[in-house]
Image (cartoon, rainbow, N blue to C red; front, side, top):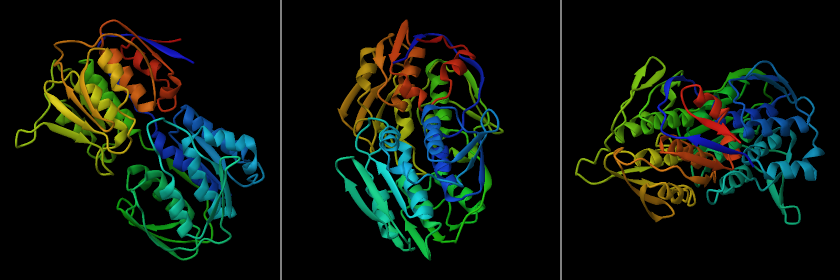
Length: 434
C-alpha cells in the first residue's frame, strides 16, 4: 500500500491542465465492443481504473494499440466469448466498477454477457437495478449464479421499447443506450441521465452509425440499426479535476490558471464555487483563480444558511461535494453540505475534524461546516483514503495544513487522478510518494 507524505502550507502558482474525463472514457472504451472496426480514442487518462479496463478488454481478445501518450486504437474484431465465463474474468470485473458497462455492448452484438458484482468505491449502496431492469425491458434474461456471485445475461434478440428509468443513473443510461443502438425498432428512454459523459457517448455512437435523438435531454429516442462502424473520438477534460483544482487554489490561497477546461461542459460547477465566495474568471477556455486571503460563503436571499447539494445534471455532480466540503472549512461563514446519492461518502469528515475542522455530521447524508476564515489552519494528520473523491479532498486539506500529513491507501486516488503528485509538485506542492 502506497502513501503520500505532504508538507503543507506552500502556495501553488502557475498553470495546470486537467486530464481526460475518467467517467467518460470508461463508457467510450466499452462502446468500442459494438463494432468490429477500428475506434480511435484521444485524451485517455493514464489512471488505474482506465488502465484496468483496457487490460480487461485486451484479455477478451480486443486488439489495443497505443498510438501516443494519450491515444489508443481499439478493434474488437475477435472477442473471446469463452473467456467471459472464466474465473479470471469475473475476478477482474469484481474489482472494477466500470466493468458493468460491458453488459450493454456484449448483449447488443453477441447476445450474451457474464458479469460479477462490480467493485469500486466504498461509498454506500450502488444499485444495478436501473441497468438490469432497462436491459430486461429490451428483451434480455438474467440468471444469478450464487456460487460464483455472477450474473449471466442472454438476449438472442433485443427489441426497442419505451421505458421510464427509476433513477437518472449515468452508467445505467449508458448501458441501456449501448444495448439499444443495435436493437430492432425504436427505444425511448425517459428520465435518462444527460451528463456530458452520456452526451459524449451518444455523439460517438451517432458517428459510428447509430440513430440517437434528444442528446443533452432526459428523453432519448434511439432507432436501432443493423451494425456500427469505426470512428475517432476525443475525451473531454475531467470536470471533477477542474473543480478539484479550483478548490485547491482557494484552500492554499494560491493563484492558479486551469487550462483547456471545455467551459461549456462544466455546467453549474463554477457558480457553485462562487457561492462559497471563491473568485474565478473565464479566460477563453481557461479558468483563472486569483490568490484570495479570504472567501465568504453566500447566504440565501432570506438570510438562511447556504445549502449545497448534489443533483442529476445539470445539477451539481456528487463527485465534487467532498472537495467543496473541505474548501468550506477555510471559508468565512457556514454551509450545509447535503450528499443525497451515497450514504457513506461523508464519513471521511472525522479525519478533517481530527485536523481541526469544525464540522457537524448531522447524519450519513448531511454535514454542517463552520469555516475558519483562514484564521486557524488545519493541522497535519495521518489518514487513509476511503475512495477517490475523499482522497483528493484529504490531499487538498493536507496541502493547506500546518505541518506534515500522511495519506495512506493512495491507490484510491490513483484510480482517478493521473500522476497527481508530479503535476502538483510542478506548481509548488511538496508531495512525496512512499
